[in-house]
Length: 254
Image (cartoon, rainbow, N blue to C red; front, side):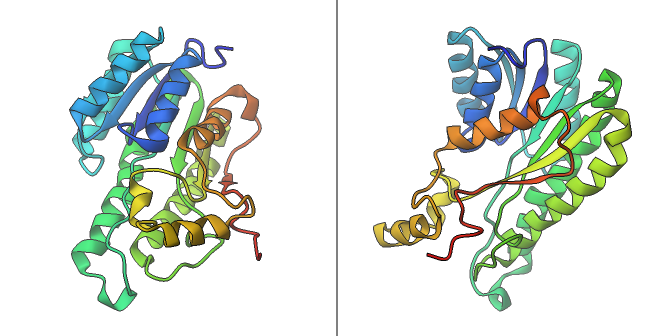
């Protein structure tokens, strides 16, 4: 349908999971995509897959904790494709997990640096580029954990991702008058590499699936379709939203 035809998007955390599927979906819908992650080899494979499908993409590897990297991604988008219309700040980490009193300061900082500071640094450089375009869509990946559900052992992860929602709401209020919409996607349990730390046995998988009203986890491409909605003009009156795409885990009691 080419709902993003002529648009340029940055997607972080694109080497696997939700970011990978979103980058491919954006490209299939006509967007020029700048894909970002730490692993250059995986990004190169993604770019090749996009190009085989007739799409356009370019990769730049780096760490979202690095301010210079956030700036370089925007410069690449503008230099290669003439501007920036969409940014999906999706890169994240579980951080150190376990009882809160046992979390190390380094483990706490890792989650904050990647999940929250990385999102802030991305937005810091993406916003001026979106302003130069006269508007656009800025999207973050958060989670239901620490928002609608408290889960033991997730203090660093939950706090950092809840902070992303606060950042998103502030930016939505700041940037709305300039035609920039800002939203966050809150996935439920999703079959990604990162999620395997939560479900490393069949028994744990069964428990996680049972928490959801749909009694299953999402596949990454299902979450990507909701990200596409927020990126596209279909969501033209949606901003400041913490959008649950969680299979009903937030409301389920069965």
